[in-house]
Length: 196
Length: 196
DNA sequence: GGTAAGCTTGGACTCGAAGTCTAAACTCAA
DNA sequence: TTGAGTTTAGACTTCGAGTCCAAGCTTACC
Image (cartoon, rainbow over all chains, first blue to last red; front, side, top):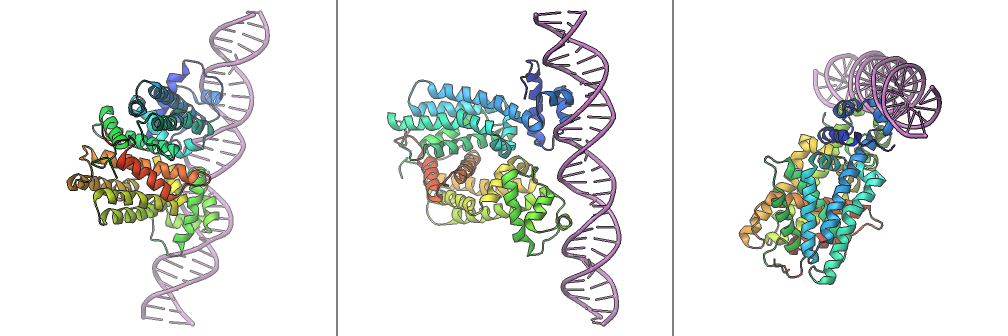
């Protein structure tokens, strides 16, 4: 992939709509060319193929997630309070980039196999969140968790699945509703008294 | 899709390995034929195409999930206790059918677009679990939840993502570890005292 | 045993989309 | 002005999905 001229990046975002609606394989390179107003030959000049375009879009979204999540994780307050803000921030990115996020979920398996993407998911969510969980154990605001990375993965799944379901609803659920529901779920749990 | 002769079903399971490893589109019909020892022409005699084979495999797994989940949900005890067993049962299916489950996660977007699969996901997990959450509100073992279906979707995401990550690890995490971690997460929450 | 209906299969075929290639036009900095 | 890199149309190759067919096979029923 060659370095892109700046005017090309925003045009490419239109491709996310197609990928989100039809999936990568049902989307023809001609369609991408039509939707982005970038001719096919030019697309092949910059990218090695469709998959690299998808990867580029994912990197963009995951970069935004990483910025939002690390900022929320680094803020003031207990680990518990920060975790709540991390969840909200992640859901907000979903709401801000709905089609690219859906495309990421849709072609999840493919994304997981792209090494750059796996690295970005780790850096943007799993890493900071599992770190935050460890901090919570230290500052006393969270339980001490034997497998922080497992919990971080579970949170990632909960947040993305909720984001997917909720933005697919009519009317779509609000970020505040989702954030409240998820935060209560993972912070306070479902049982009535909080004890076993 | 024609009704399959019984001897063909087990052979087809070998296709799940390919789909899980490479995804549907990178898997050639010739490869499926080679892996299952069913000639290509015969595959096309029974299925309209690759996607229908994938759909068939998903239905099988989701049928098992549905049986396991509804049985766990219908058992004795409070809603909270049953929810814990539901989570364990679902994770156990992941462990029992690793490749088919991974394929399902892998081609998630495609699966979501297949109407039969969307129905099966609803019937096998979202429906029973959101019902169980409502019951928990009534029997007093769970908090009263404003959006039970949203929580059910979040649980689904948490369980499947955990199952994915954990089976991809070396060594893979045990079902018991995953079930304990997830159950504590969603039942008791992460904060130390269980209160707000 | 005959026979008809449907199953099984090899192999040739069509079709469509991915990706390659080329050459001509264009931009822009030195 | 010139040369390096960019942009593009369009022709081309390649590959795999799905179709088709004809020959052989199995099996149930007479």
